Length: 407
Ligand SMILES: Cc1cc2nc3c(=O)[nH]c(=O)nc-3n(C[C@H](O)[C@H](O)[C@H](O)COP(=O)(O)OP(=O)(O)OC[C@H]3O[C@@H](n4cnc5c(N)ncnc54)[C@H](O)[C@@H]3O)c2cc1C
Image: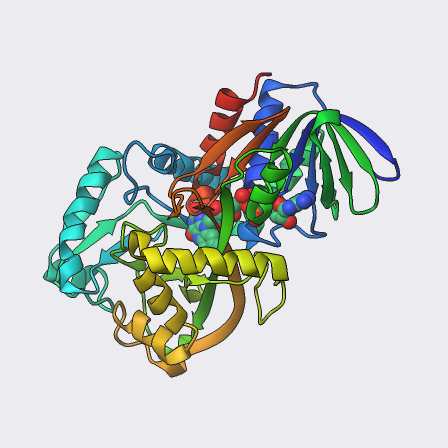
């Protein structure tokens, strides 16, 4: 759209994260000659969720079988694995070991094993002896563990670069540094930060951390708001000499949409510990008070306080436990419950920090646990692209096109 003041497109996608790009590509397979444009506020790809995640291709054992997450996780992971292989992108098929960190979490292993069965995922219960052979560095409070061999890790930045190249090759325009600031749904017009106007037939909102704000401009999802949670990581010092054969995860609190601090071996071999899920004061509050806006902070504090008082989904424990992980020693203690040999001095600071675009329903006072898609005037809004939306992105894009977009 370079240089022009008013442009016309058939499909305008707000947000060039993994959801925006995979949606554009899925639309192209249905519409070979339509004009499709993705506008991305940032000058670089993957500046938010899609470049700041763990890159884990989840198996889908956590989620209730009827959820969108469960329905798309196994096929999404397979699609992303195939994509990485076909493009020669880094892929590490290590598998995952899940361990209870408290004895009372042991029963959850049976629930997870049964969900794995319902969701068609291969998972095997390990005895203490088998765990010691598979993953000697890990500790299980009960002795038992669940092995999920199919879990793999990809490189988010390599995938994003490749998807962007696919878009260009398929005549999908990708406009970087194009921040949509004004929405006029009745006129089907969007204006950007430089005063450029885009007119569209259909707008698709894939704005991640800002998807609620965009939806509100269309008069929909007014009770839904992003409640950001900060995901901090530390890097494991290779000098520690701790060898991990798999990704090691705790058995999570299934009432919450977070998986707990775990180990992730990245495709370059570096081991990351994290991410946390610490309530944050702003959508882009990656460091200190940067990215905090007063109006947002007041709303977020109010929603967090309400969650704390109501204690829905065990929020009070989550807030206290997770906030403690701001401190290196408390974070190290959380990791030691999984991998006892890790010491605070083995944790190297790293600039990998992600922000979870978690949706909160102010009407019910609950966190929304599944992906959500809403139709608005000449628009479709993709809300709550929380983990494992990276894993699910390819089948999810197809689902949105099939179910919400008349082509
Ligand atoms: C710490 C962390 C770890 C995670 N780990 C995993 C994992 O291991 N596996 C997994 O499956 N998932 C994981 N996830 C989830 C995954 O990262 C997200 O589900 C996914 O990246 C969401 O993609 P998206 O395109 O919706 O959002 P984003 O990547 O945030 O993209 C949205 C884009 O919209 C742009 N935008 C916003 N407003 C505007 C506007 N007004 N105009 C133009 N552009 C705009 C933003 O700049 C942004 O680039 C993790 C998430 C976090 C935070």
